[in-house]
Image 1 (tube, rainbow, N blue to C red):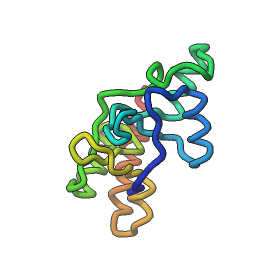
Image 2 (image 1 turned 135 degrees about the vertical axis):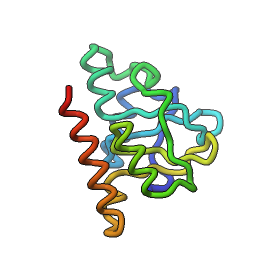
Image 3 (image 1 turned 90 degrees about the horizontal axis):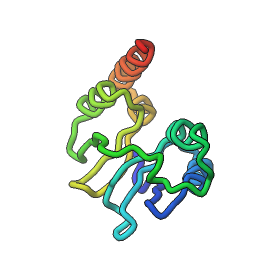
Image 4 (image 1 turned 60 degrees about the horizontal axis):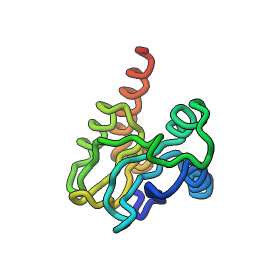
Length: 137
């Protein structure tokens, strides 16, 4: 799990999110509450920026709120790796926020699962499920 991931707030715009993605070499940034910097309220992906942002002709100064995804599923800090991999496959996602209540404590990715050899099968199965479900369209 990546602890202390880069985050944005509703006060940020899509340009600022894109710069953070570039600077932190990620395509996924949690959106947290500005007042405490920890309460998870959504996520934004590089795909969100393209599909909901630029493809809809929004400028870089458009609020992150216009492109972010809300109502996301999260892992808890006590969730087993198998459960997290299953949730990622079920939700067709490659990254999963990890929370303690509403507080963001990290992000787990398929890459995190694959790096550890004992979990390589779980990550492979999850990626296979995600890829197969995307082909159905």
